[in-house]
Image 1 (cartoon, rainbow, N blue to C red):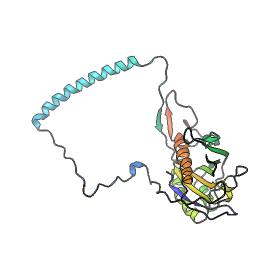
Image 2: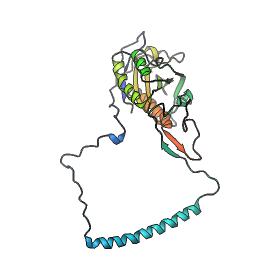
Image 3: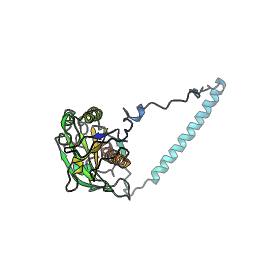
Image 4: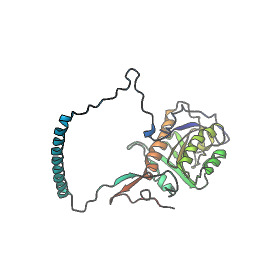
Length: 298
């Protein structure tokens, strides 16, 4: 789930005080492999299993049995290899591509710029098949990250090597919320992690905010009403989501719909789809030859 969540300053003139959602747990400092395992209950404790060694008189017998088993396994393996070769289709059918992880820890390794078509490929974003989608009202990309964020927040993004932003204003499936959500292309993963920690400090101190994007009639609340902010990070990308009620009323503290929107955009759309597509390489004759599958400098 997105690790950052905070009330968000608003553009003048304000239409109400900022409200805060209940904070979510902080994002883990590293990949799951570095998480501390669950503690063993005190009454249970650790009980190491003692592995008995075989008696020398049995070792010779076990060795002999091992040799017989080894010969049998080798024979069966050879048989199945031949059988597999005989059953392999020869009609030119292509094997399914393999998916391998790809390093996205810096822009030097992942140099291809983001595009509006990559980040928001359709006019609708369907999170759940068969359910009403988010409507994409307007998209925008730019090289000056101070357009997407103001004051010290914008300055720190530039200092962190932010080379571009891609954002869009959307309407929620129910039409009750307006959303400006985007992705920032930073120089390195370390820069992105530093900005992840800095966002809340700067926003709480009213030293910057992410700006809303006007998208025509009826979208004024995204720039003039009280809003909520969520943000997350993966690789050298920082993602964010600003939400406002379409009726310009403040978002209540216990509003579950707002939390769901932030999760849908940051986790399900940006992380699981857009950034994930850059974080893998599809290998094989039938692999998708898209730019994300084989990035190049741009």
